[in-house]
Image 1 (cartoon, one colour):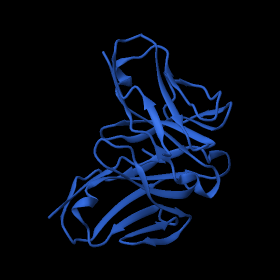
Image 2: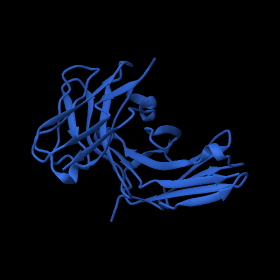
Image 3: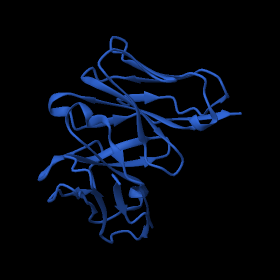
Length: 114
Length: 113
């Protein structure tokens, strides 16, 4: 089954404790992206990757890191989480080209930073 | 000012109504326009995709883009309770901006029987 998986689905942590949210896709997509969703603000792009070893900032990259060492994986790293990073996070992937806008989203990771 | 503005609603309509959802934007470099639907506790899924100005129809859904007014719309005909969801507009530019996607705030729609 074609899918984007994220782990963990739910996470409660404390300020300053480094964490990684994993994202994996099995569709051989070049493009992957991370978003956060907050009430009243919609989805905001954090980072995206056009291919292996190619990453770029979205609209809200501060406080986040990403890496793309393999095509299927695109982990999101919070080196020192803060309460304002409490949010619902989505990973997505797609092909490039005209089909690029058919992004497939993961199920989301709800993160709470205390 | 946000690059993309979308009325968050909520919008409540009776079954069978025509629904109009809208977004305005300020960045004239946007070329690709999308509508995503998001059910509660799920990730968004692509509903409609339009390149540049014009109309596109898919079943009960019609997407319109007016680049001169920087305005996009999604119309839902004969709305059904199963259409109850949050609808998000999204757009991107071309060239070096291709990977950057900007979403509206989302409109919460409820269709009641």
